[in-house]
Length: 139
Image (cartoon, rainbow, N blue to C red; front, side, top):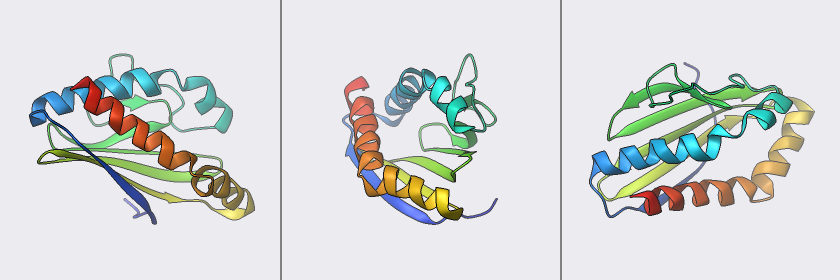
């Protein structure tokens, strides 16, 4: 699989064992990303639809992301693409921290404009940090 350019990494301290944190991560992804199908279709995401009973297994999806690698309690790697970007979001449970690493490519003029709107505006940072906080609360 092609390596995408590094964008950023955010982390959140968790006061829970890895199995509890893993369950909370999957629950938050189902809840927060599960309703994103209309936006995913608008952007032309692959995948645009989520897996009905998303459990974080390779091949399963939430709108905009497909699981490409999963090691329960340790690592969940998601990947997707749409008309403006190709991207990867990897969650790593590392001791008492949950880290979210983002890699993405934004080809062409429209891709650069999209990057400015999403990354440059700080929107991606806010959404990623909120997602990590939600996982922490769910533990």
